[in-house]
Image 1 (cartoon, one colour):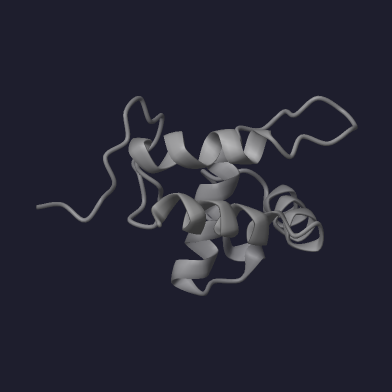
Image 2: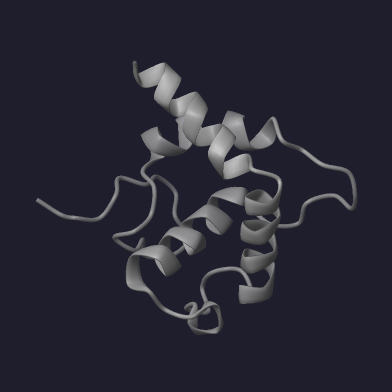
Length: 100
């Protein structure tokens, strides 16, 4: 059995830290609910989440993200914004409620 997530239509080989399609279906609507103002988004949020999970799982520095993820500045910007606006905590609380 592979430790890689089940991901359809990936343009690159998935990392073990990535979300599966089933997990993304649960998280995506929660992230999109926290849409902000500003320029239209140019990155796929799933790739941002996958990059954040990669940093968390491997312990690497932001600057050391593999090049097949979005630029590390972009990934960190999203991570920091979501943390500052408590979006991580809100999503966690919503998922906990749904699981109970």
